Image 1 (cartoon, one colour):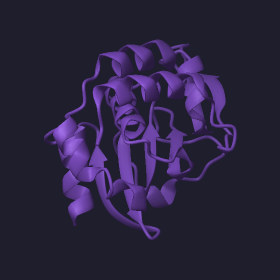
Image 2 (cartoon, rainbow, N blue to C red):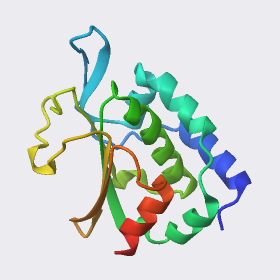
Image 3 (cartoon, rainbow, N blue to C red):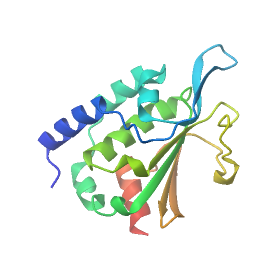
Image 4 (cartoon, rainbow, N blue to C red):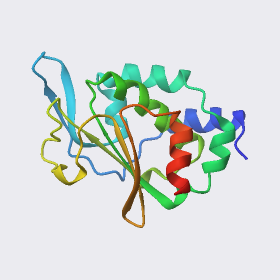
Amino acid sequence: MVTKKKIAIVSTLLLIVVNLSAQSDSLNIADDSGDDILVGKCKRIELQNSNFGNDFFEEYRSYDPDMEILEDIENKIYNCSVTIVLGTWCGDSQIQVPRFIKILDVLDYNTNYLKLICVDKNKKAGNSDITALNIERVPTFIFYKKNKEVGRIIETPINTLELDTYYILEK
């Protein structure tokens, strides 16, 4: 069972621990407005250490996931891999990505099954070809079971991240 104490402990530990096994090919580039953005596959620590980091920590800390729904998806999400395509320049990404990562942390999700891909404003990911993902808006959260896509949350959830994830995993 997920408890508030567990949330606090997991959140604190996971904010400190860096997943060294994740692959990264992200580039820190300046967009047309001169702001630094990340593009390409990246690690969570890179998000946290970039300009995106301040927004990341603020949203992460302030978000209070729905624990009842998390208990319903707790065992279902472990059989999934998740790809998040985001823009560090994008307001919706700055809100939804930290919230979703907090949900994963609370669930003690194995982040080896999480892939983060940053795109520029043209939805290009630098050296990473993401054409097959058909990304039109960010953030896009793509859920896979046995390497087959089972659903997406695009830009903002219809209900909440937790409830939309529940509906996707129930399919």
